Length: 323
Length: 286
Image 1 (cartoon, rainbow over the protein chains, first blue to last red):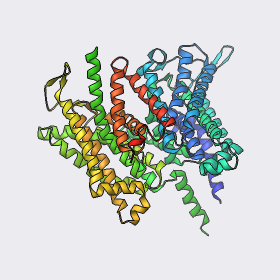
Image 2: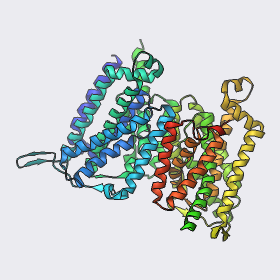
Image 3: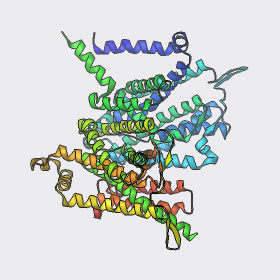
Image 4: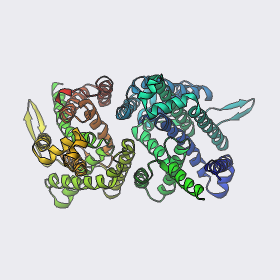
């Protein structure tokens, strides 16, 4: 057995599990875990947007919450203020985050490394404070809540996210298509070019790659992914709030990504699942689960800098190669 | 109207001096260890909590000025040894590690000190008549302490052996090691000093703000602004930028929503980052 085969089998089992969740989970545990798993899917897409920039292009963004927030507000304002239906509101959320990512990216990708990390925080803080101040548009501290419109309408029949099973599958389908697109992207010539920039941007420029435009493209794609996650989360919670634009939200996604394994497709999913499951299990009994998150983050960084996926790969390689 | 502007301007100036004290620690840690310290705001918060603890335990505020920086120094040395030293060569990971550290510090304080914010009464009561307004005496005293500490730190950096070592390691690590400077010990001292400065800032600021386990989250962006606008690793520039920013925000806050003041300085910071990444005060760098 090679590593690829083991991982393929595990992935198949995982996919089967995800498809069976709405029936399997209530049978073996509380129904409430279905919505925890739904939430994990959304946040892992958000973490994946951090991973796309950091793991595949080498840019550490601490401001992804800005695009998450744009997606949220696009949906919430679209429905509550403009009276849009489900799909136009989703479109508005994604378009808002894409536009914001384009504008922020034009400036941000001129910088690299520490400066890039800091300017992304600064941009997200500017709009965080703006969202708090523009109460008429965003609802300020309280946020904007809205009534869920129908997703599909077939004659008399209405299908909306209020149906928990449909909500789960809608979010699963959206998140897995995003992961699929990301996988194709990383393997495409564009993805190769981005990897070249991550390894050495001077050499990448010398072989004729337009480093600035490529970084900008990656920044916008990553912003759109974060925006989709934000739009889904708005539908999931039926509201939008400025608190999700604060830099702590971006920071958590960075931690999830690096703990799971940056530069791997499923690393963000694994890191996010770990932290959210720990939070849900511990927070009911002990309110200081942040302590565990902090300790785990530090331990992983010191002892397994390539994350859980890296740890797993080392382990399997050692196991498989034993004659 | 003029009085309001004056009060807010002086408040800004004093707050700027305290921020400068905290941001100096952030700046030396960045300049020497190449670490973006997300936990730095929490070092400040630990200082305010220590001040409150000392006040409750001894009934007097004054010992905190000595005790808090000492505990801060010890904690800083410990953290550098356990957390920072193993990840010296991976700057991206340092952000994750210090983020984890920030969570640990906040949660520990929430667990022991409690989640409710508390206030400390000014240890020097009363006001003084100043330019036609009544001004709290303690705030003026706080500005003096901050100024003295900043001055003392620069004297330390330029007149003592360890200070010289710190400048040498920052300038050229390999050469410094070749000359026999114990770089690893310098790193420990630097990180510990950064913590101590932030803790001292916390003690000075404790009677002016509230003592709260989340205080660090609010103050961190401001410190980063000072460090960036002053120029990363440029210490006098950092101090100047902190005072300038707080003064500016004080003035803007006197006629507009304080949030707009914050947005203005953030926009200013973006412009500086994009147009002059070496900071506004390059001439002050040495």
